[in-house]
Image 1 (cartoon, one colour):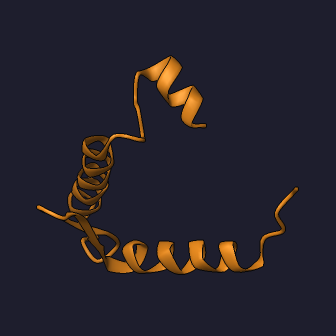
Image 2 (tube, rainbow, N blue to C red; image 1 turned 90 degrees about the horizontal axis):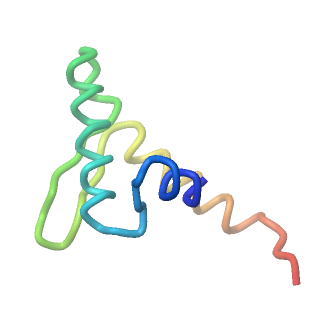
Length: 73
């Protein structure tokens, strides 16, 4: 997916500025749709701070994935 975004759309998700931009766009869409509780994003000198339902659920889901996934050697 990262290769597709980078090669076809010119979006490099490895850059911190791109991550901040995506977070802010998502928060703006949620706000415009009338659901600011879904995702919030604040840009700080340390990076992006996520909040809301998505900002809480994503780290939990990633933690579960990392805990239970099987690595291929």
